[in-house]
Image (cartoon, rainbow, N blue to C red; front, side, top):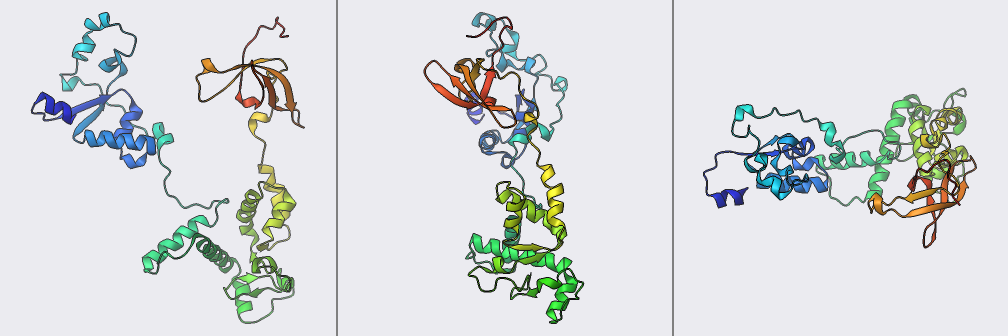
Length: 350
């Protein structure tokens, strides 16, 4: 726009620019930092070049820029009024088309993820690490020397200690006074003690082996907090079975409540359902079918034509992998990458 204004040498009092895309209009009218890199860079450049312009929506049928891109010949363009003079309402501001609402959900896939604190089972220490650094900055004690591993360990001790303080108030009071817990107490047989960091740990176990503190004397945690810990261990063990997950948990923690593992086995594992698309077998995958091998890098018209020569069903009878024969080679590909061609039921492929 600055170049056009300088070339025409006109005294421009207002600049109005229009687009026939509601999504693009939403991007331009918002701050560029809201969007991902590809959109953000282009929105920033547009906003910089058209800083004083007023962006508005124009229907596609009234957009002269579309005339040359919709198949009109040069002969048709010579007599096309929209191409030469624009829409009839362009010189009458009161006749301009109404502007649509700009809903955010239209461009959610291009929005940058916001910063939020939440209890994530896969990252129980990550946000606490950021919070501790932020607190140190506010107190003026942050010197940047704390490495990531040390910061995460400090954060882990923080939320373990905070959880114990919330659930084990009586136990902390008794152990601090060097008093023994009542015989009927659930933790009486664990010979619990408070370590130098103020954490309640299980005592009387494996004092001699060359193991670290967490393995020899696990930190005690309440059963109410076990869901987050077990879910995190389940992911760390690559969704392992019950015994593997519980073994991983007991490397660092001792969860009070003997029925907690059983409760996890009965409720948590049942939530790990199979992917819905594999609930029913795909009857279209048959030996000898002619299929296209999809390729995101090429248009569909250039996908290679192949023939299924072997199926590889799983133990459940579902075929997820097939062997394909092309004009030059043999491939093994997942069935999700195939586009099955329709064939007549009366024909038989040989």
